[in-house]
Image 1: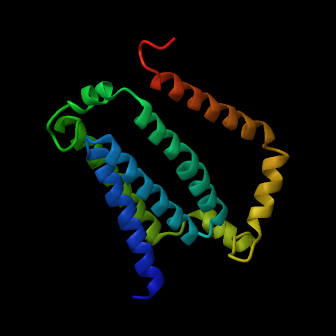
Image 2: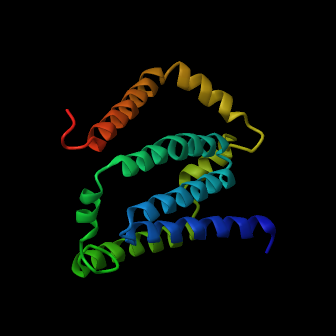
Length: 182
């Protein structure tokens, strides 16, 4: 096994294992730090998919913005509210078994079908892309193309997302206020 394969499987294992722990822990502070691990592992997996812009955006936007916002909301919020949320069930996973089992079986079925179908037959969109010569290679300059499209064709959605993030920050600050503050 070469070093790239070892790093890829290590990142994949870290992402999946941290995500499972993330949703199963009842301590919100630990869950936030596991979310940090998941986001960095997914950014590393994006690098393996030759999506360097998406990996950098993942780190800058989600780790640098969203996760820090969640940490501040946790630190500034009412501790009694979090104690009430953590007093849920004593199970490893909070949803009942009769709901979790069909969901798990459905996900397993979809994953197995996809693995078997894609393993035997290459999807037509990959074959058409290979024949047309439009396969993205590591030497292609996709970051420049993304920058041009973001600042021309997609400027309005880009600004709408920034306003949405600002509203989320204002909402977090409002929720973090004490009850007696006006």
